[in-house]
Image (cartoon, one colour):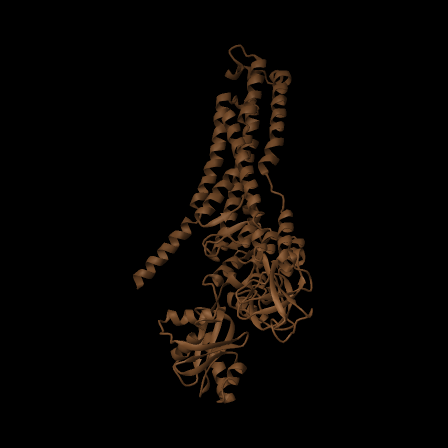
Length: 613
């Protein structure tokens, strides 16, 4: 019994240690969110007290680097290309494109000019901007996200400790039953059933005191609070360790318990259902070869730094195209880029802007046909499941518009199958995204999410509100995301699931209770299967422990002694008690075989495919 007590105490202490460690880990390192804000800002100071709105920095203005904490509402700041915007504000001069993916989930950069608002933590891509600070410090958008994460983590649901809840009262109940057993057989039973004194348990002299003491001890020994105490922690420990081997970082047994009860899974779009990286999905041309269109477009975009340029260059390099040398590159933020390629000016960007660069104008019917062609090719490419499509046009001196390139965000290969697996399990899937409505709707239709469960153009606060509404209705909600803008929702959800991108620690992974180390969306379904299997083992263990005690304790108390002349000895009681604990631990260890059948099926399918080839 003492060994079992030590085991129980060890498991309980280990479980508590792991839970505390997981809690601290999940709630720490939120400073990454604040680290997006630059510690230094360029304060614009003019001698006349007001700068010209025509120029980013007027001739009478000077720039002074000051700590961002010293910036006040109304101050004028200069943000150069490639720099992080230090405060929330409004653009007062300049035109550029800004990467807001860390806040909105929108992978494509957003055009900004005078009158547009910008947020702290976003990145200016192309050209200098002068902004007027509208909120600073704790009032900025990024600071509010930090506060939401901390508040959500503080409202985490209490962990159910079944071992503490059941084993404690059980011990007192067994002690009471033992005392009652002694009292019954010593004062009543030995007189009502005098034949029981002939049993060996009463000794050679048929002593009622010895009979009563042994039966009372039998009740104490055969009862197994250890099995009740081990039922939950052993299954949880095996489940979490198995998850680690499968690439699932599960932060505590309480996470598995909540995940097994999930009936709604909320998913972000950019970077979760999609790869989060703009890519070329189609190329169309009016006269020339499509590869030539891509080749000269890559040449113009070679020195640009925005995501669309990167997508075009990556596509050209993947096709081993020789990229010509360019001269005199000129970029118009939010419109396009122009450069001299092989002695002729080439422009790539928005249709209107490209047409304005050249005297030669393409026919309206040709342009309409070009757009339909590139969009049709983009939609035909079902293998890459292109969505959030943006079309950029290519024009050349003397010819006008000569081609178009579709830039899209690719859907993860396992997105559709994962959604189907979740729905087959009876789980409702819902899409929450800060992206544009048409892009979100296209993705949802492709992966099989119903229209009523599609929500677009949401801020981080609105995502959290959507989760809170479901929780208030009694649903258990899991949130799947990968970006900083998902961190508040991941912390607020009953189970936050983050995809780990490029082996980097992010605010999303710190806020989440499960991290998918393999960066595969299919691991969401795998984690759910593991959680349900683990909790099934917990229920089996508890059922066994309760059933064992319900049967064993009455027998140990001598219920069979009058009619069947059978009574347990203390040694037999001790052996049964040990076997009960061994059964619970062994049943939990069977979890190690979870998923082995699925792996065998995958290997068999692979071998069949190889044979057919």
